[in-house]
Amino acid sequence: TQTTRPQRILAAVQKNATRGDPRSVVKAIDQFCRHKEWAMNVGDEKGCILDSVVTEVNPATVLELGTYCGYSTVRIASLLPSHAKLITLEFDPGNAAIARQVIAWAGLADKIQLVEGASGDWIPKLKEKFGIETFDLVFLDHWKDRYLPDTKLMEECGLLRKGSILLADNVICPGTPDYLEYIRNSPRYKSQYFKSHLEYTKAEDGLEKSVFLG
Ligand SMILES: O=c1[nH]cnc2c(O)c(F)c(-c3ccc(F)cc3)c(-c3ccc(F)cc3)c12
Ligand SMILES: [Mg+2]
Image (cartoon, rainbow, N blue to C red; front, side, top):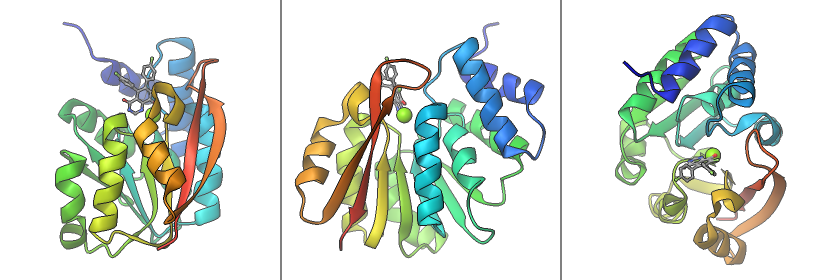
């Protein structure tokens, strides 16, 4: 019977990456997706921009919207300080099942809380469920039509503080025009566009980094 793309990504990690070595997990997925089969990980080029933002922010609390196979989850968590926590929300149960195994292979399960379900349902529950006050960094990488409503929801739920950073993938391809229009024109945010390329391709894409001003 046919395997899924996430299953083939996990197989590539288990074959080519070293247990407990997050960077080898990231490299194994990038190799597989560049040379064998494209997949919607943030990838190595945009991943370097993500790395620089994570190291600059040095966050104690991170929220990732959209786990997929756990590539960016592992990439971010590998750069966090020891006490830091990352919560990642994934809608698709199949993706979540694979991501848990990728995260375990990387040896990062103790830093990461993977929550299965819709971001719109879970965002209002994060404070009570995980004892979170606010997020220092949010990585938006789930579904283009949810970037704006979920950002408004995070504001309303008091999950952002003065200085919280939002980093959004795919703002050009496939594009999130309503989110960009809001975040670039709101007096409550200061935004910056990092031009890059769609993962593993020559097409343009980029990351939008926004600071919440309170
Ligand atoms: O949906 C996503 N979430 C997170 N990251 C994504 C990402 O990094 C991507 F590169 C793409 C993408 C872009 C171009 C393309 F041709 C195919 C897929 C998608 C995406 C867009 C539209 C869909 F119908 C399905 C997937 C996503
Ligand atoms: Mg993406």
